Image (cartoon, rainbow, N blue to C red; front, side, top):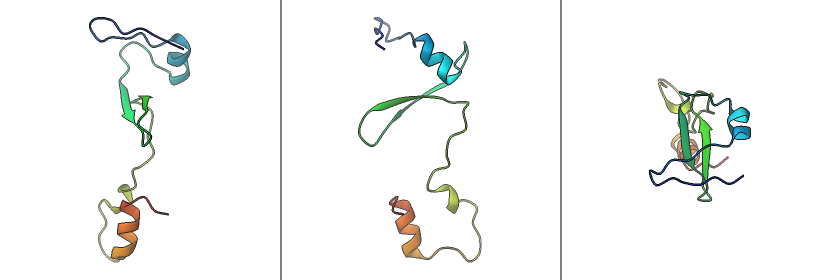
Length: 77
């Protein structure tokens, strides 16, 4: 599907995409850049997967060692 950018920088999101994402007037939309450089449109109200840092938030007490934390922040398995 192709759309045209107006002189004001606006676009019309095609109806099949709006229907797929549940986008209605007033919906909030996020544009996210992926690791390969492409941009993805995301309905902001949809629950997003937690970031790799979410496991570390609010943690107190015994937890992962430094090597495990560094692997987590680098996105290593």
